[in-house]
Image (cartoon, rainbow, N blue to C red):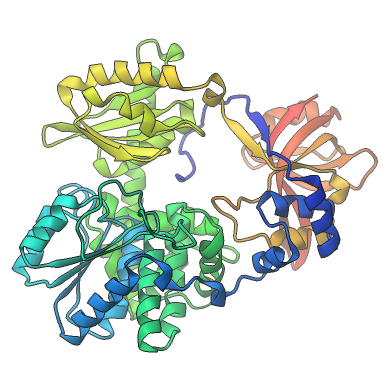
Length: 576
């Protein structure tokens, strides 16, 4: 998820997509067991929470219900190797990716190992010189530093050649990663729930989450205090939210308690970042995604990700404040660069030949900063709602980031362009690639052909996922109190979007701010509820006339001068 777009986006009629209804018999049984509104039971069943026991676990997360880490394949081998290294005072290198998941992973494992062996070191690859994953440069550096054991975090599952080279140099490698494996490296141990033969019950941990499980296993084996685990939950929660892994199962438990620590007693580094972002209320997953994560990511995007790790490892608040201020400045620079390149890219795409007929957007700027290409690609998708690729030049080749529209597999489309591509990798929603400059035109043509062949017309129109249609009369204080307990919201546990039909304004509609619509809506002769529709002032005339409309919205609580009221955040309006 990117930050809010910096310029006005193209306006398109959204398709409303309603969630498939769960079995109504299950809904009725659950509503009776919990003594809740049928709509609440419906939402729970839609989230696969269909029994009283499952609802209890959902509403009352419990750290004691985290899975035994030794259920993970190779965990015993990884713990034994780490135990041996610490017992012998071997030189250990903690190696992590340069994004939020990677840097938080390093902070969790490094801090734990350093409490036992202060000579441990950490390494973050240079995004621009070394690229993603365990690099040959890092392996060579490790040999020069007489490293005995490398533990990778949030990367390493594809490092077949690098791990083999490390072995030849006498260095053991323990890989911890959560990305999909193909050919596994011959590491001493591999911790990845997605690898073949791993029966670990939960497959969707973040990279930091797997590092956390390694610490948990070590603590269990040696009968140590679990304080280390609870003290790391703020970092784990940040990694889960920033990496958009599903907020279900163990992840939901970890984020639930991680948010408590973030709001009550975060580590100095995160506390300094939070103070700079100035949240108005309690921190939520959205605050992590839009305020905390971009600042931590900025270090790796614009320069040296070590700055982010050093911030997260701070023990002194004064030191943390200084480091956070520096990263905040870096993030401001990133936003400035991002804004300039976004405007150039959007204009370039608009001026492309056959712009209105194209189903893809591909743009290239020779001197565009590599660290923001993914963000700019996301901006293009938001602007034109087309699968998009943004290229820049590096070392005589073009490096690109690809992003896609909801439901379209960008990785599959790029696979069909392999004859034009030197190297690429990624997943359904995002990918990175490298091509030769002379192949740019051929790539544009081939990419357009592949997307045109694979994409459905409906995928080229923005959609709004609506979970449930309800009547306004169902929105009571009790309804909202229960709904609030569905949090923390995030990927695979979204904040419910509702729809209500044939509503109208009570005559209070007015424009607030620059372009927002504030009104009170009602249905039939029911009680009116305050609502706001951001960026929707163009609807004022029709709504002021009392014309009925359907609306999609989320439910919030607004508190002013210690007085609280339910407030609807309108996502879209369709007039009848």
